[in-house]
Length: 333
Ligand SMILES: N[C@@H](CCC(=O)N[C@@H](CS)C(=O)NCC(=O)O)C(=O)O
View 1 (cartoon, rainbow, N blue to C red):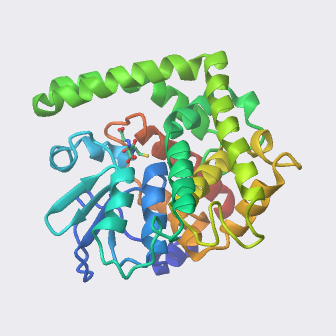
View 2 (cartoon, rainbow, N blue to C red):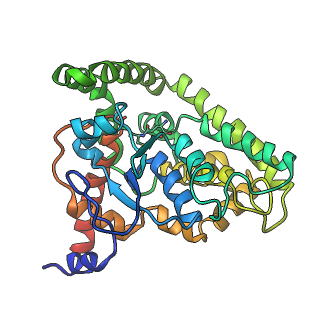
């Protein structure tokens, strides 16, 4: 066995299963997720911040597992993340984040009700909503169509990921329509997703339209910079406590950084408060547990199987596999 494989086997990284099965871990809280998914990352980070005992059940979107009949029964939209608590199923990251706060044990550290001050709570809601409204998938895939806008893309979004993602985006709506014909029970939702995908693609492929989206991100980050200026040196976005607005901001900054958009938005003195914030937030335990690092990337490559169907988001992960295979080859050489 290669020494890298031996090293990876020792790591405590949850396995990717065909149909995720509980590993007997004593919890009644399960999260269907993928470590590379933007929306899963928000929920993962919130779970770690709250110290909630949960078991991640990895959905392999490289194999189109989100469209398998058993998963469409759980979430007919064929999307992750989905939280399962006893017999309750909660899809959608926004809903899950609210659920964690409102319905789970109130002794857990809060992320929404972090203050008694109504002005602070209103600021948290404002920034949470501003950031949540940004189209993460569109920002991500669009950056592969206009590489000159991204100065220094990082793992997992390095070449040849970008090319694979581009072609994934181009064939995605056709694949969804084909899948709709093969799955009569999910036909409606799959055709709806295909239509949305076509509309997204029109924006993504048109540089002028894509820049308009980046300008909206720029405007939101401008507001974030002004807000951060009002906070103390060791405070967070809206107050002294780390809140749900910080979860949203952290995952967004990480994604923009991975795409190589940090120079456009905050580096080189452009937005020093954001730069400083990003450096500080990376030190949080919840960040380290949420964002895949090199061993996770390696584990991902070695456990990946060839895809059966690659959807719009699935393409992200298969691209990851391609790019990382290249990295591993270099490491092993
Ligand atoms: N509004 C949803 C969006 C979830 C979403 O788009 N998830 C992506 C992964 S980041 C997904 O599952 N895509 C699979 C697909 O659409 O095929 C949320 O906030 O949870």
